[in-house]
Length: 182
Image 1: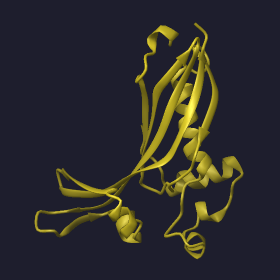
Image 2: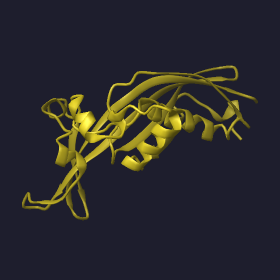
Image 3: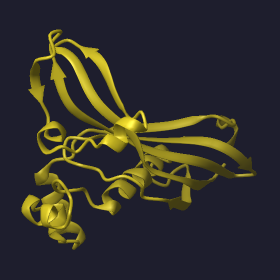
Image 4: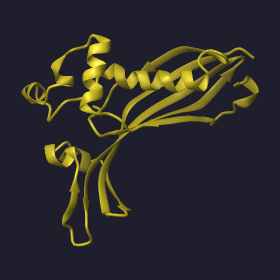
């Protein structure tokens, strides 16, 4: 059970989700009532100027509120008072979504956080000769832009199969406030 005394400036609450699939987005569309086909139909998304379907903005927001609900033991330790976010980047199938909240202020029983949600979009894996061993949807559909490269968002790292190319960017920055019961 979280208590006010557990928190210090810089304390981090973090979670990640790696399950964004077409099936999940179809189910979310039905459940949420947001049946805009840019979330479920690649052809429609492409006609709208996208390179494929994108996740619902409220899906990402839901992961932020879930982070706090889980952290507060679903209302046993406290409550989520406020979340303010700015949606900056699209979330796509196959993305790893990392949600992190860092304490920036404490006032009595209220704890204030800076929130950052990042996406990691895998592009491909190449062997040591530069041959593609595995290509992900982002590589197939061209999700990575020259602007991403210029901004330094495209990175590589060694993985067992070779060198993974991926994009890491902030998709949703914001703030949140929780109020603890003790």
